[in-house]
Length: 610
Image (cartoon, rainbow, N blue to C red; front, side):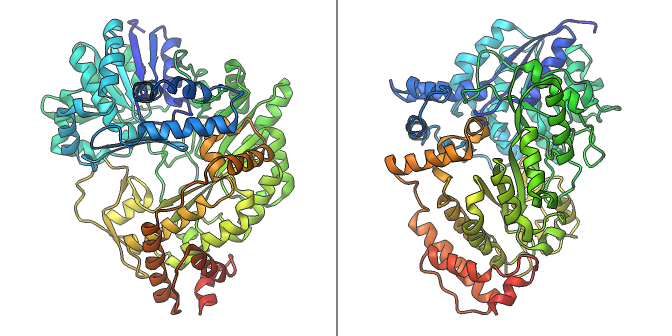
């Protein structure tokens, strides 16, 4: 290292206030190990609390204390949740910002994903909901530090506008500071770099890191010119240059223990750090590109050993941690459990896991729980084996879903499931079966995330759709929303599918989620960073307490539900040739039960209906 730099690493709003930023923690540790001075800014927490205190009245301080108080009751947490939702509703003219249930939402009505729209928003940055926080808190702190490098991480679309507004303000206040944006978001919108208007954005910052930041941020801090920084997008005169990835990807085994900011805490009574222990997912689901930012995307992952993971956890002094790998295999988890046992250290974790048929063995699930696995996130996606094969997820066998979920539940492992509706070539009657499935298996599920299919940028499906080679989908010939991670500019071409029909059945699935036994308690005790403090039995007790002492969760608005019922029933009539009409959710559920059939057969629903 030829120079010692002062570096600010900022994680802007809006993002999950219940979690710590993983990438920033690793980058801070790398820079500090090289002798640089690093300051971390957790604006994603500070800015939200700033707004809540400003608009929430005298009781807000007490509500904010509740989220980190280990002795808070579930009723205290519910009251705090309602205060956050009431206070943030409607904040920011033209912007949909809210702290709601287990989510921090941000959606600008003036931004649909176009580069020109982002340019326009930066010209009106004073209208941004977090502008006042930036100008009163984060920018003055930056001016006092006078850093050589100011890095801003953008992990998803919710952070894009605020990250860009912050970059613009910092660059204006500190013209000699190198201001760069990074984060996994940029790796998935690389086509935007070639938009003629993208060059104008470099009036507001110096560069964008579109690959892993481990080497790029080190080079920038060491004073390497922009032209020589791996994975950097920058402006050379009027031309946007896109530098290639690092020649040799950073070995994950060599990463130092991450460092987290001391002046802002996640919304949890406990310190629950995240760890990224593998560079990308070895599976290649057709609809997914979450690992596009990896320097080994679609290649063999770089994997951290169990011993090294244990080193990090013990150095952090953590006894619960989030593994954010896209897939933490059974064998790696069991090896980690053995490593902790060898060292006499007890720790538990949450992770992503596939619906592996090995989980059909109760002994495997008990072994995972004994090792330390306390919660898993599982991609069920579809109940149709044919659709799962189409999406390169052939290891999922819907006939085994119920048994796997029961085995995990009985082992004491909390389960979160992902469901998708609107996958190409999947009839609506297949999607409707989720209602009966959740009724039958919901006792063994803690949380549910249902989503609508979209073309995710850089995913295999999107690449095929762009080439006109994805059956069931016709992608738009033009794409004016290059900064959107998920493309909606497509139409369905098979099975009478349409956007409205898919959204309708998705609304029925949302109503099923709201009727699920754990919906209220998991909305009140968000994420495993909080729920991991409790057993499943304790969470059920909390659910009963809430049901007895607080209002029930709101159902879908009547007009929206009625539209969903009518639109879905119409699709069922066409697909199945039946005289199907829905006057209520219970009618839809009844038909869903009739359609369930044999989960081992993709054609079962049509066969049963006829």
